[in-house]
Image 1 (spheres, rainbow, N blue to C red):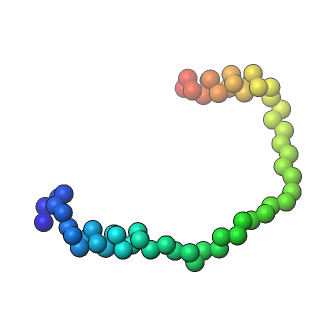
Image 2: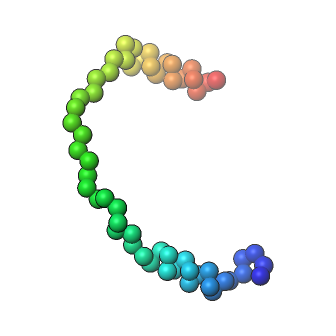
Image 3: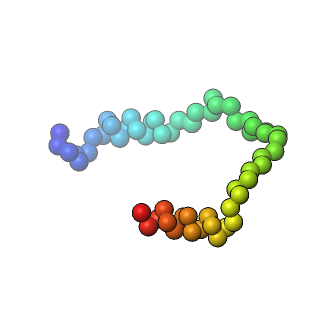
Length: 57
């Protein structure tokens, strides 16, 4: 069989594979509690200038 030729068996195998839904996974949502803090220490303008410099390289 050449590249691109129609393979009916392969088509049927893929149809069966995609036609099955796997519902065996845990579908509960995780709930995270806590807080996040960060300190950038730089102004928005300083960060934009640094970004422009990185893009120029």
